[in-house]
Image (cartoon, rainbow, N blue to C red; front, side, top):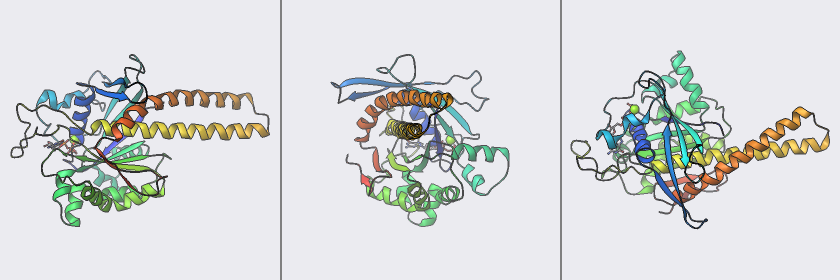
Length: 343
Ligand SMILES: Nc1nc2c(ncn2[C@@H]2O[C@H](COP(=O)(O)OP(=O)(O)OP(=O)(O)O)[C@@H](O)[C@H]2O)c(=O)[nH]1
Ligand SMILES: [Mg+2]
C-alpha cells in the first residue's frame, strides 16, 4: 500500500495545527484501544510513530510532537508560515509490532494559501501545492465550529469558513485521483458556544460548501462531517482562551478522522484492484497473453492480497468509531440519501 496522502485546508485560525497536536496526543503520547467485537472482543492498540528527519525545523518535513498540547500546556500561537508535511506510520499491535499497518502523510497548508491558489498567483509553491492537493487521497476541510455556530449571514459564513475560495478552487481544477474522500472537520467542538444540534451544523456546512459538494457528488466521492477537539472538554478557559493549569488533555474525534480517512482510501484501493484484475482475466481468456502481461497480473494479485489484509485490520477501528458520536454525517456515492449517524 502506498503512502496515504491527506491534505488539510481551512482559513487561518481554523485549528489545523492544533489538530496535528491532537494526532500526537491521541496516538503518540497515548494510544487508541479498540475492541474487535467480531473476534472475542480481542483488543487492538493503535499507535503512531513519526518519521524522523535529522533537522526537523528547517526542512519541510515536520514533527507533530513539537505541537503536543499535552506536553506544552498551550496552543502554538503562531500561524503556520510554510507548507509542511508530516509523515506518520500507524501501528496495530495485533497486525505486527514492527511493521506499520500503513503510512499516512498529512500536509498542513497555511490558512491564507487557498486565496493564492484561487487568484492564480504564479510561482513554484502555488504550483506544487496545487498538485499536492489534487493528487491527495483525502481532503480535510477545516471549519471552526465556534464561528460556524455564531455566524448569521452569508458574508459571515464566508469569512468564518473561507468557503468561497475553497469552492472556487475545487470548481476550477481537475483532480488526478479517481477516488477521493472529503471530510469536513469541525474543530473546537469542546467550546460551550458550539451548537449541540448536529442538524444545524450539517445544514450550515452543506449550504456554505454547496459548490464543492456538487463536485464531490458528480465524481461519486464520499464525504462526511466530524466533530473534533484537540483538547477535550473543560480544558480551555473561555475568557483567556488558555489551557487551564489542571486540565487533562483528552482530544476527541481525531481518531475518527484518521481511521475514516484510511479506511475509505484502502477500501477504494481494494475495489480498484479487484476491477483491474478481473478485466485482465477476462481479456486473457480471449487471447494468449505475453509473459509480461501475466507477470503484471501477478503483481496486482499480490498487491490485492496485501491491501486486503490492511483493510481487514483497519475495518476494526472504522466500525468501532463510526458508531461513536463524532461522525455526525456521511454520504457515500451508493447511498440514495444522506445518513445521519446515530450516537
Ligand atoms: N477550544 C479550542 N480551541 C482551539 C482548538 N483548536 C484550536 N483552537 C484555537 O484556535 C487557535 C488557532 O489554531 P491553529 O491550529 O493554530 O490554526 P491553523 O488553522 O493552524 O491556523 P494557520 O496556521 O494560521 O493557518 C488556537 O491558538 C486556539 O486558540 C480546540 O480544539 N479547542
Ligand atoms: Mg497552522
